[in-house]
Amino acid sequence: MDDVLADPVDIGRHYDERTPIGEEFRGGQLHMWYWYDRDDDASLPEAVHRTTRKVTETLGLRPGEHVLDAGCGPGETAVYLAKEYGVRVTGVTVSGFEIGAARSKAEDAGVVDKVRFQYGDYMELPFPDGSFDAVLALESLQNAPDLGRVLKELFRVLRPGGRISFSDFSLESDAEPRRVERFMTTLKLPVLPTLSEWLAHTAAAGFAVEEYTQCGPRVFGMKAKYLETAMGRRDEIAEKFGETEIAEFSRLHRGFFAPRKDQIGYVIVAARKPRG
Image 1 (cartoon, rainbow, N blue to C red):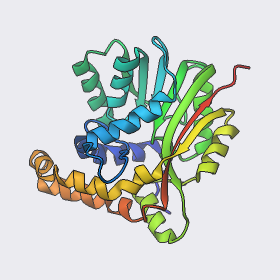
Image 2 (cartoon, helix red, strand yellow):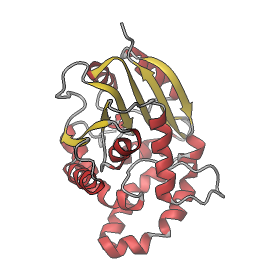
Image 3 (cartoon, rainbow, N blue to C red):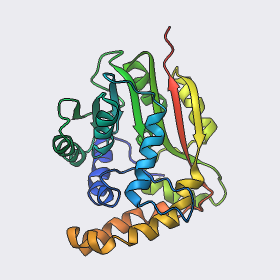
Image 4 (cartoon, one colour):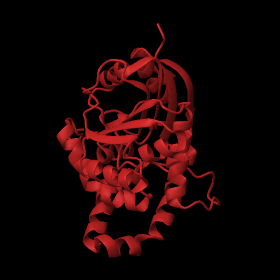
């Protein structure tokens, strides 16, 4: 898989290209949706925010805590954490577009005193040991060139007793591997762990896993519902960005839909750094 990204500059460029239109479709967010079934009438932004809530609720956040949003995207999640839980949030990303978009969202929401965003490579974070009470990683570990190294770095910046919660794609079936390879190439995934492999990587970094779930059927399994819902807003978004940009956005994501819906899972893992 020679096309897989291997350095922060390329990863940043990858998201610079995709985030502007992607966040427009998903209400200022960039991660996956969550629908209960085909009859669920939630809008796409509402379905995406469900994923936000499902993952962040596993952190057990308390007012005044300091949270690292590792791979913060365009900032909507960090703003939500500050307003909903009364926490301080530091968001890091390697996308210049995302930093600008995130700072604008924080200013518009009136939370610049609680939320800050900066360029940061989670392979080598510019923070002292034990800087954070909690770490959130919504679909950001997937692009790590070295997953073990990233998890150990997140372990380092957490205080003893601190928590981490992350969500990401998983491999559910290795049948028809070409479909999976197209998916991985499109998203620039160096690896696609199974649920058990995600848990093993987490434990190997020193974390004690406390909760996990596999909700792929309600996430990637609803890819057809996503397409139907997104098409309902296509003309509106094309008017803002132009037909050429929409066509390019669609081209860049074509491989994402290649796997069968039962091949790609979606895991949520919550773990803790031992106190001693």
